[in-house]
Length: 214
Image (cartoon, rainbow, N blue to C red; front, side, top):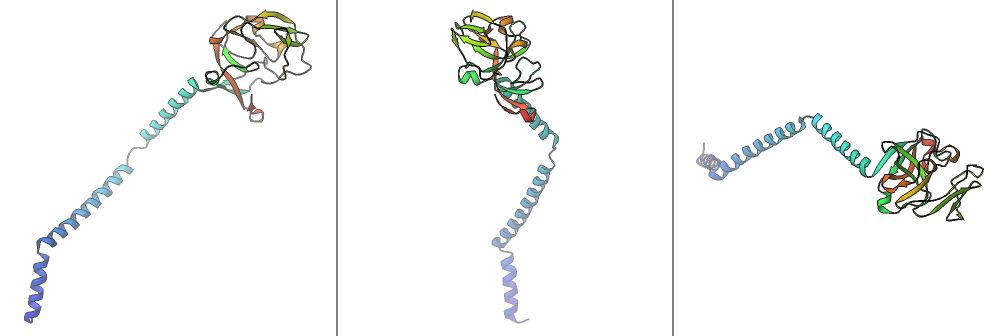
């Protein structure tokens, strides 16, 4: 081989053995190791058990549902005819538990409450009278403090017995069912203490063809 060729080959071998090239080769190997380790890490992550993740999601969902039911909204079932024709047997409704924390009850509100004679039972009626008001039912009409008060939520031809006059006690409401001839309400068990109120009925959600705001 010519001297020039031998010198060139010696130069290349020396360059490959130089600290710079050794460092570069080691770096390349290290990079490949990192890539391999990273690939192993991704594979290990993908092999994490799915069941604990599903269980965690279910637990979170249950906790959120419990919080909503206890403090915000709750479903209720209509078991009787006392609120016909506006609420029918079998209707399912949503009750807002925060409505009266954000505002005051209004006459005509449909309210779910704990039955005064047995707080284990939930009742639903319409708010008719406030504390210190005089309530009278006469000739199928409602009178508050002697003044006739329209009830647009009742059928025009509805007939019911006279009642009162009575004065609603302090801290209480007078509650009546819309189906006046067939409702056990404040005419039977007296005024409703404010602390028995659970919330305001805001929505019929089932059956679907009757879904509407209340």
